[in-house]
Structures are given as C-alpha cells and as structure tokens.
Length: 165
Image 1 (cartoon, one colour):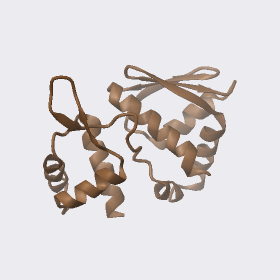
Image 2 (cartoon, rainbow, N blue to C red):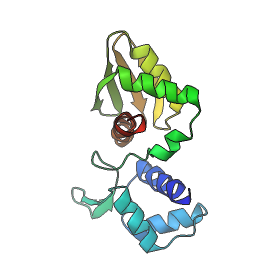
Image 3 (cartoon, rainbow, N blue to C red):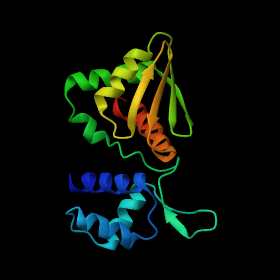
Image 4 (tube, one colour):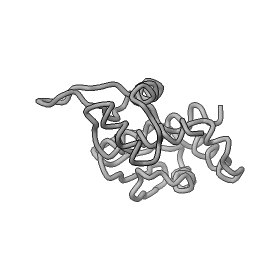
C-alpha cells in the first residue's frame, strides 16, 4: 500500500515538471510525509520505468514520457466498486486508439461509443483531465500540459491492457 501511494506521489511530482536528481524526489516525498531513502526512490523509479533523459541544452532529468509507467496499478482497480469496474469494461470495449496533439488527447472509439467511454473516463477522475467533449466516435480530453496528455494516454492504455484482462 505504501509503495503504491509513494509511486503515485512520484508520478504526481513528475507530471508537474521534471526533477534533476533522485535527492530532489526524496525531499519531495519526505515533505509529503513519506519516510524514504535514495535507494527506495531508485527502486521506485526502476519499477515505474522512469529513467533520466536529456533535454536540449539542459542537464539530464527525470520526467514522464511515453515510455514511462502509467501509475495505474492493477491492485487499485480490483479495489474499485463494481459500478466502476463495469465502466472500465465499457472503456475497454469502446476504445480504439488515442493520439496526443499538444495538451489534447484525442480518443477514437467504436461508432456510437464515445459518450459511454467519456462517462467511464469521468468516473475514474483522472487528475490530468481538465475537461472533455464526446461526439459519436471521438473524445477530446484536455490536459493542462502535453506531458499530462501523454501520461493520460499511457494510463488509459495500461488500464485497457491489464485491468480487465
């Protein structure tokens, strides 16, 4: 339980911006009430598949990108009420694919399924979603940043792959 909460906090930190060092992440987690060491953070980063990446003209940083972990843990989904799991099945059945366009996640669904899939997304209360609009087979989800839109796509894809397998 603590590990899941800690890893979610790491993803929360990195979704708001990159961190240059593991020590920076340790300090953040300690301020959030977690008793952690650099070794613990290193293991968490490895489990979340978060590695340092180079940014143009800057030092290497830890940041969320398309290859990062989603932060959606199968164990969390098992704890959800049956109504929410039912909506996850709607999400899985209706979802076709998703593309990121800056801070907008464009989700394509089976024809006539966009409203149902959008309702499923709303029920999951993703913090990355500022708002969404659904048509017949397309949903526009607006995120605060492009990085959050990428994270959101990864989270949704991971839910579809693992949650209801």
